[in-house]
Length: 466
Image 1 (cartoon, helix red, strand yellow):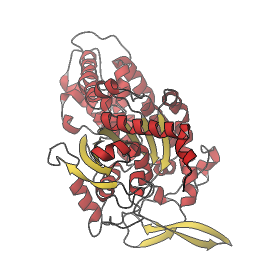
Image 2: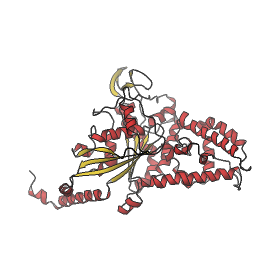
Image 3: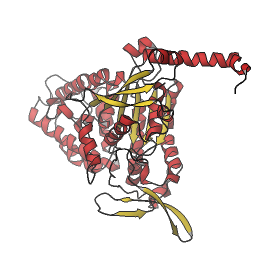
Image 4: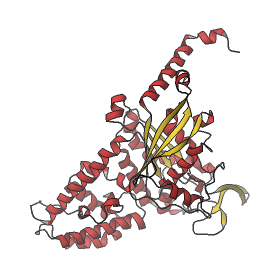
């Protein structure tokens, strides 16, 4: 039994009072949390959101979410699910619970989903007034390609053109850009405006970007809506492309393309930023690092540069009440390596360290501003089991699962993750041969269906469930 002096300890009393004030203030000011979810190409954000909602509805399989661990979490319900811009959770959930399950189709436009979370408060005061508290968690899903448009807000058409033309000369992109660059050499920017010529060369630029994105698996693709147009499909707003340096004179092809770039930047990118980006509270960025390693050094460098651009795109900083109401800023940022189940658990620390090294230079600025930046590895839907096999007298940690487009399960040694940034010999040794797996069926209440999804939730929303 605690002694009387422990109850009278002034530091303990002060600490308890401070915790109580913090809980009360948090509840008064933060009943709605906007969590933005995005990712680089094929990183699995659709599966992440679907699995997150699946587990939050009943709170099963989330032992590292503190409110669940304390048995205070009561569950969640989807709010206003029938709106046209809603994330199609039911359809994607049906994909993952089908027999056999199938990967959901990636989303191609912004979608939102609101969850109302219920939990018992640990506040002594609130327990007397309203013991069951609610938090509205708004999930915002948007294509990762759109994220890379934000740097265009600080660029002129001339700067955009110079950067894009230089990037097209990169060895890994040069072949994909060949048809567009050849057409550009025969295109006269200073000629009187010719809409057919503009449309032709712009379409070849779009095809070049699509090849970079779909065939080469590159992440740094700008403008993002050229590969994922959403509601802008077929719009004249997308009929422009980078041009060599020159003077912009009214009535010319260059003037029309520059005008469309400005319109795209102001009416599409800036509007998206003001209506959505500037209102995010928390952000998770998913990264398929295994595919990046598979693809080689140029793709790996492209991923690292893309992550650097992402870090510069967000509004960082904690805010008070007025800031939260009128100019909220991201105060927690999570970078997560997805598909961690594709390698053995003993490789997860190296996988995490590798992503930390990739974002380290760009992460200094938000950390300097007091932003909590975290890196972890996770699997939203676990598709493999871990098995150990003997090979040449050594015990190897392997994974067992059904490979993509195959009918039976197989056991394989997926390889090792370098704990540091890859050296030249790493790229020539053939060590990166990570496989894609087919999904396993998402079960109603089975344990072990994810890896660290609950730890991600604790970081992103756990402090609000108090």
